[in-house]
Image 1 (cartoon, one colour):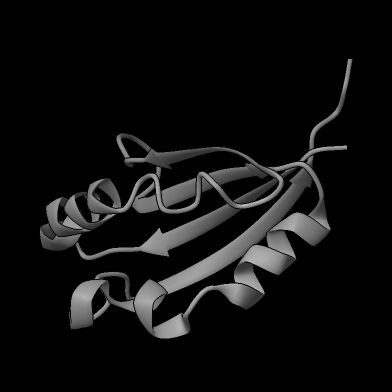
Image 2: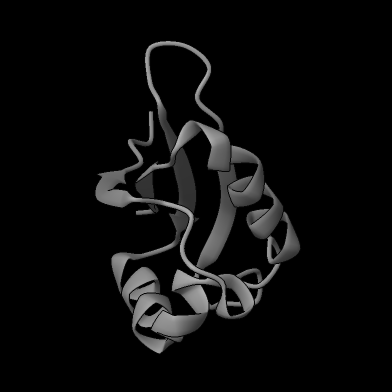
Length: 98
């Protein structure tokens, strides 16, 4: 059963453009990871002020393997830059096959 991982990022209003630019620069960096099924960056519009990073994985183990293998420094800041987000909450869901 596929799972969805959503990372809710608290981003200062003036930093949204920079966050989007950084994600665009590396949007395909996870594509070849085993079990990766898709990615979306969701910009807040109404009723929410956080960005949501939506990823879909074939299994929880696939996500955990990717998370454990990636470099924390490379993920936290792009090319040595300071992180844009001021906080993050990780949420996990199973996809219900109807």
